[in-house]
Image 1 (cartoon, rainbow, N blue to C red):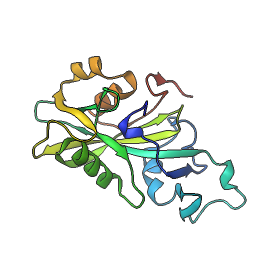
Image 2: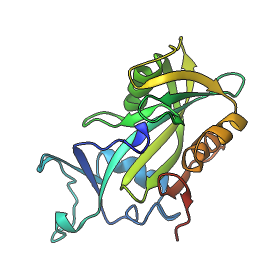
Image 3: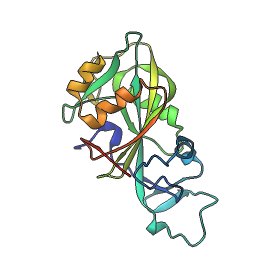
Length: 205
């Protein structure tokens, strides 16, 4: 796939309802509203059948008219030296943070722990949300969380040809802007919302 492991396509599709979250991650889209996605904003469909629906969907708003997005999660694992755990993808050789598709019925934090373990062999403690990133070209929304390491990592996994630690300067040189910014955002005290085209950041209004 040409994009991030943290942004693979998936059978589950979510629709963001009319609460500002369908506006390309504009500043008016609050973190609180985004984090309510699991119980009120997201409407999941799998193979064309509704798996879960929002109880307060507005009557008369046809499902087919609502924008479709897939959801992924990723972990920025930071050690005591402020280095970040990264993987080199097996399919295209790109350096990225570990992450992947959020499964149906899975909590955000559980998805982060599962993806990091699958791709690096490491167990982590999820600390906090650091950013929400929308791929405008593919309709993918990624929720990124800062994590602390716990346990050993492995040299390779089924999805990563290499697993290592990088400092922030190395991240900037090794990753595309759309993914490097997620690492830098994890060092801020407040979460960010950003949009991108898969490679470069895109300004939205």
